[in-house]
Length: 481
Image 1: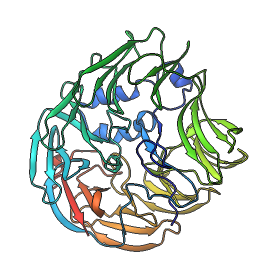
Image 2: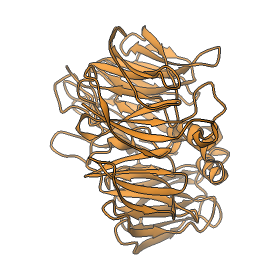
Image 3: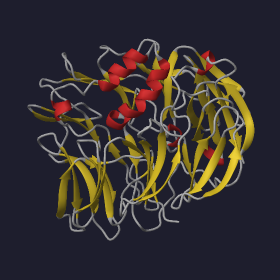
């Protein structure tokens, strides 16, 4: 089994971290209409939790940082986030009333209900701490670029160290997962500003007047630097240790740890995937602020370049030794031969890449009748291999993977199962019941466990919170082998 990608930390051995934090600065971004999409959703949704949860999956594609690693045909470490042997049924270990799950840090599972955040013993579900001063929370390992959103794969962050939450005043706090104490706080000075975590920093990026970037330490809250921006910027990227801010007057690149002008010149590399036999495919910001995907040979010579960026699935990397998949500014998927840059196939807009592994790209796709399906395609040819209906989804589809199979929640109410299919053929090889009631999604946890989050909006529903639906109690149910 050859895996094609991994959520990894910074370069370690032959692993490479790559981050892509912002979409290509197309016309929508150049005129300023698209820059504040995330803040608008978060600001509006503070009193409208469920629309935020459903809508943020779209916003996260443009603004949410995603880490993935090496994508080659030769054997490498398995991606973190794979669930061992999905054909083996899981059984309930414990459950708790909760309507969201951040993930697990060490022996603590972080979850919550409404604005109450709890730390739970991972083995028993017994509450270790509780706080009502936080809003939405996610995990960080100190290298993962995250914002005021939730990734369906947040529990896949390798070796997470801290919990990061939006607080009730609209700022960000980092929280010690052991006892729930606040370690650092970044207060939002303008409700249009973006608040994100990058490396060991909490950042406020305000692209409206007065334009400024402020950094504080994620571990103790100490203010490290503030940098005023003289010229407007329509987007931001993380490229290594630099924060890259393109705008009409050019590109400003700041050193993340000092706020001074970053060393080095364009292009700024924001994503890089090594290829079998040498060379790489990478996404980069040019001197004029545009993003292009470029292929380089083993000697560093450019083989081809195209507009658009490498897509970022929830799990894996959609690059094989022969094919790279790019998201165009129009929103369509374009597959290119890694050696020649020639188009292999193209997929219309409207699909969210859920995973890419073993030469298969699985997409969440909307159908003509308004349903949502998981569609598996051959990365090399674009041929549709199989499709299956997706049940409830909250932040993103409930798709689990063990490297050979995918597991999807199917059914409704109290008759839901985790249906396990062969990744390439789509053939059902196993299924096992899920104990919770109401529409559900499934998320991976360490140790081969799976969390069922119940009471989430179904694809056909109106998105009502579970506690307003008679007989349905939102729960996080942890299942183990």
